[in-house]
Image (cartoon, rainbow, N blue to C red; front, side, top):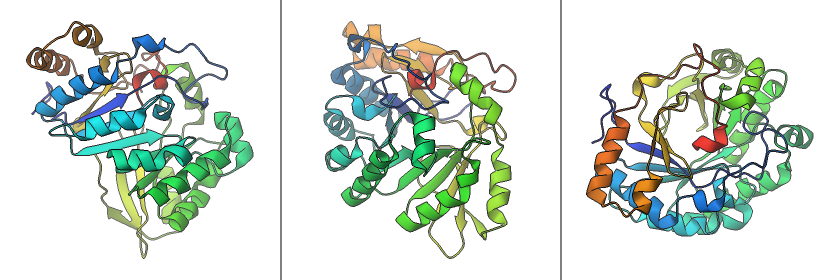
Length: 324
């Protein structure tokens, strides 16, 4: 078991396979941004497999494929199959914007990914275009293809932003009720310049939960997964609604995760700059045993908490560089 300095078990790796994305969500990447890494800087599938294999030997059992947008990485289903076959890894999931799921959903499901999270902040085509630069119908077709392929659960991630999409909260609830999706609301975070700019639209999610409680009977609930969402269920339905509150009610005391970027940097906290570069090690042919020692050294750097409130200017990298 991997334990950090605060006795938290690290059993979850969010694995970025690319920093590239085919959308430009306003809180993640600047409009027109194209200064992505050269692909030769990305970890190869074999390098990724070694790192995750060693994490598995140390007690990590949850892996989530992220980006950027992970589905822009060629042959991502082949990587998923290799990771799903590793000893100790019993939960392989995916975060995606779903624009490419219509084509890739069956292959990803058969490769061993069982659960997916889809970023969807609005159900209005014009608003989707304004927030992401993309087309809503591609994401909706991808969602339906994922449902048909057999993914369960499918979680919708909605970043709630004041005067941007906060008037669609109830509509998103009804959408998820109709399609048997799980819904998670997320607070904006000051990650990079784009995240700090979005901070002006911040809404504490307890206000959203109270708004829903005025309309629906909410019952405390739980949900499969390794993330920090706190769930309720709408009485008389199976719809679970999660609230991810890194700003108004942080969950650092129970943090169980680290993030591996596409270029091999291990980030110990989304809201801090503590990092450990694994790429030179795996490219030099390091053994699994020696790599395990380096991973343990890296985990020893994990801070007690983020400092989004105290030091909002601290994290300069964009969200897409970290792996969600």
